[in-house]
Image (cartoon, rainbow, N blue to C red; front, side, top):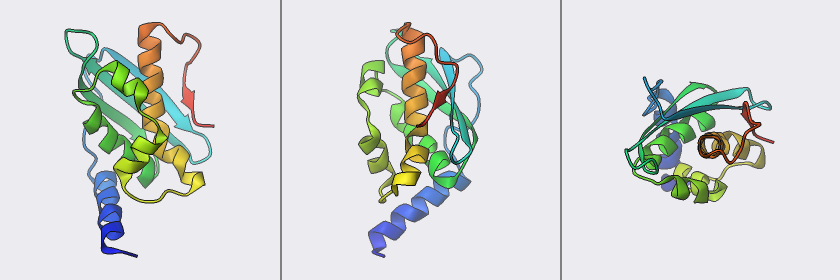
Length: 139
């Protein structure tokens, strides 16, 4: 294991044990929940938009899950602040895995991308682009 890899593993553990942006927003513009049934992860993402209705002013999450899902949600919610909803839509799994900074096994990718998928589906529901999603599920 390289020193760089160890540093990223420590960062993941730090975000898991001391999550940033953790908790419910009092009056979010939108919220959405998702789960990874294979691992038992469940996350709700709350988004507060700025007055322009497009720029993310604040993002938070709450829920339970493995170290990867919780660290990913912690890191992602920090990255989302200042992004537009269009920029959120453009994020893909590689962007989230790059945030984590370590190789993720195929079984753990679903854990890593849960928060991203929940935020993107929440934005699509908010915009009226998706209507029949009660809960996002990783497949």
